[in-house]
Structure formats: C-alpha cells, structure tokens
Image 1 (cartoon, rainbow, N blue to C red):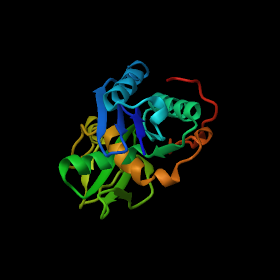
Image 2 (image 1 turned 90 degrees about the horizontal axis):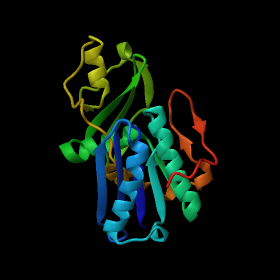
Image 3 (image 1 turned 180 degrees about the horizontal axis):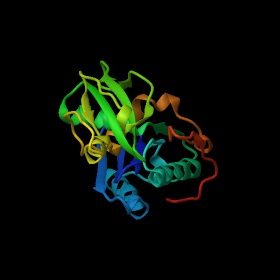
Length: 222
C-alpha cells in the first residue's frame, strides 16, 4: 500500500506518505489560517520526495475531526477530492486518536487522554491505550464536555489544547502537554491498521461530535 495522509483539523497543517516499502515522508507546519494554501504544497512535496506519482497512491487518509470547523472541512474536501479523482478508498481517522498516537509515539507512553479546545467553554476528550502492535485504541466514547465538567484519567498522559483553555478560564488543570498537536505522520500508523475499513470517496464523513455531517460532492481542492 502507498498511503497519503493529511491533517488540517487544528492549527497544525501536515501531510505524510507511507510507501509500500515502509518508508515515510512528511511535512508539518503550524499555520492557523494558512491551511488551504500550505496543504497542496505539502502534498506535492511528500509525493516528490517519495518518488511516487499520484497514480501510485492506493489509499488516502485524513483526520476527520473533531477540531476546527474550517480546518476539518478543508481536510475532508481535499482527501475526498483525491479519492474520487484517483478512484481509491478513503480512510477517516479521529483527530483525538491521531493526537493520542503522536503523543504515545513521541513521549513513550502507553495511555493518553487527548483533549482539544472546542471553544465556547467546551472541550473534546478521548481516552486511548496502546495495544500490542503499538497502535492507540479507544477506551471510551469520545465526548464534548463543558470545561467545568472535564475529568482526567490518573493513569494517562494528558495532552492537547484544552489544557491551555482550562488555564485561560481560571480553572484547575492537570500536568500535561498543552502544546501537543496531531500530525499526518502519526495518522499513517492508524491508517495502515484501518485500511481494511476504508470507504469509497463519496462516503466521507466528518466527526464534529457537536453535529455529525456527511459530506458529498466536495469541490476539488488538490
């Protein structure tokens, strides 16, 4: 499999490619308002570095939320446009899972609670545990909660922007990594395992948690 992955669901914008021989190529940039312009160049860069052509891609994966409304839609439309244009399957992965995977891989922990600022005094939360293959598995349903009702798993590494939101709101916050962000490179690991669950490009879905939305016939972005 040659899997192309992308994420624009937070202030970070990233793209990555897993080549069939196991080698990966990636780009990552924090650009809160520049996703639509930065992403195409990143996708071109990882393809060029890998030596592959677009027609060599067998799957496209994306972080489908929850996260920033505009960013999630940019990733969804881009991934769906690629999948439809190349007639390849689409793999949508939770942004919370991607964040948990990156933290686990980079910080060497097995249990992560990913918490992302949802604005309006709320946060998205998901608890994950590493399995025997090193892949993060969800332990409970992802939730949207008021910051005042957010609770934390004592055995998990807490990571994500909701920690900063708690501090700004004058609420108690646990120790953790408030600067942690998801990345397309971490997304690749999850996408490889979930490739057998890929869906046709026309069936892309967005995980807002606030409101489930099916996206069909998006504009071509890439």
